[in-house]
Length: 294
Image (tube, rainbow, N blue to C red; front, top):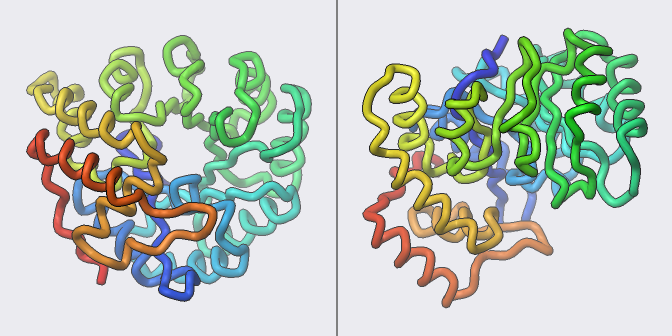
């Protein structure tokens, strides 16, 4: 079972020219990210265009994941509004021996803590033997987890609710729960989070900053050099000026054109934005690693 500590990437999904999911290269990219230093990856998080990719394509990819040498380092993001589809995708993943899931509450509808507790309770009632990382991202779901909601969920399901990805940043500084993993959603929060007792990060930009982020993580754990942290935060800052998915695909397509395709309404940065971000990264002397996916 995957250890929920360290540097995790919300891995990109790679699309063919007809905008269908390129399963082989999506897996190869995730493996490459782990080779760069990440402890693991999440498939079908928001960065992986999860809400835009069909359920059938997700199932096809999950069926291929057991063939990867890094299968023990994979987390599955369900990325679905439908309760039934969430449950079915978890069951399919479990049949492939994947047991850890990143799950965001449904988007669009307005609801409160009691409704969120009911949502996760229904999942766990159907699939008791699973590990769930809560995904706290109000910008996408319209809901922000309260500490009280998480504490209730953990008390109710201590064996299943095992962590949170905090991309709203209202939890990682103050939430303290034994045997519960907390992951801020930005490299700029990595060092502070570690100092406060967090377990690492799960972020979009570790698709390219994995090596730097791992240096900071290892430096903190070994009480050694943390000089990479400023550059890590500066690189993250370059991407935060734009849509992260658009920025990542734009920059990475400079190395390999397979990253050019995005599902509408997402799109690459325009030429002006592209020049800006590439210039900013160049000024930081940040070089994107060679991308093995082909």
